[in-house]
Amino acid sequence: MALPRTLLSASQIDRKLPALRSAAQTLARAIPASGWIRVLRESLGITAASFGRRLHIAQQKVGPACAAATRRQTRLGVLP
Image (cartoon, rainbow, N blue to C red; front, side, top):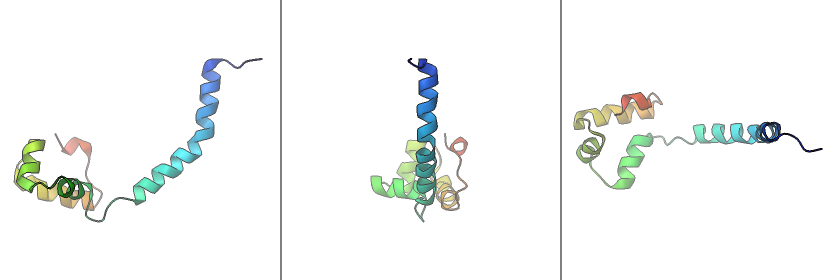
């Protein structure tokens, strides 16, 4: 007898959940020492001023945002 589609989907998610949790923990530990914002800016090869313009924030706010990212205190709500 075939299982209902929703029950099958739920059971598949239950089986994959431990692997997803493990991946999330690995990614959380993989945050660069200099923070994601600085790594992103440097990988794009742009200055803090240019990065600020792209995010529609002042250049003076890019530095504190990088510092906050290093301390893992950056929230998406902080960035426009």
